[in-house]
Length: 334
Image 1: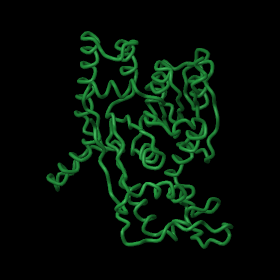
Image 2 (image 1 turned 135 degrees about the vertical axis):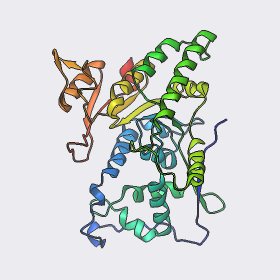
Image 3 (image 1 turned 60 degrees about the vertical axis):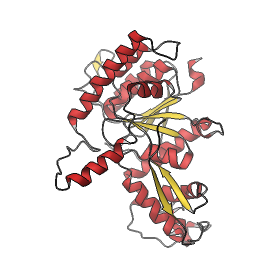
Image 4 (image 1 turned 90 degrees about the vertical axis):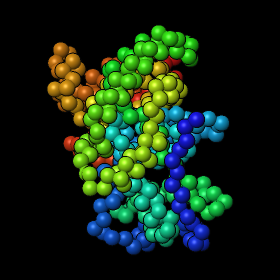
């Protein structure tokens, strides 16, 4: 059985509970120069709100947590929030190794400074920090020792691409267990994907790991990160087979495959497409012309299924941060 890596935040010093925010934002003193409310990191909270509003069953009380595949999850912020705040088993699918240090550091600060957390929890002002607003949900999970159990999400360190989808089509059947022939196909795929990942030696952000100044410290850190990686081929297969939902927030090159995988599994999904990469995907075409811009990409992706829905997320769109979300509900497969 796979175990989670946990971070315990001690609250034995009797820090006061998070006070309620002031009723009027105008009464809250704040730094007018702050741009926290416009931070690109806060966009993931908008996407989280969309997920929970459109798919409320994700957090419904049941024995088994909802299993989400966070495609091209990068740093891993979405999965960390969904797991620690909402109790959802969100699994990061990305060849890069996620980094949760920033979220953990912010959480520790807010828990240690409840009055400041109350200020930052107020919406409608530039000091608003979405994590501060969600803090009471985390505080409900304090254990009997006054500690907060923050778990690191699991990761499938892999590419979500056409190769994955086509391999799954070859091995999937109504039988949950793989026979010898299909097992060999999946094992071969997984071994090739593992070699592909390990040979790249890429960390989050696409930066090669070249720092050898503290090799022992680096080795310990790498070992801790590997604890949350699903490396066994059968565990990886079972994880994908057990998925309830696929999410992709700006998944870049994995956009098509994320949607194709969800359509193949016939499970709900949502994707926020961003970059187009026309040179990498010359086969994307609309009315005989290659897809070269974002609006054409949205039109092209919508041709994958007649019941694909489209909405706009509530953050400001930029050239590098698009806010159109495509999705399908369970009933759209009927």
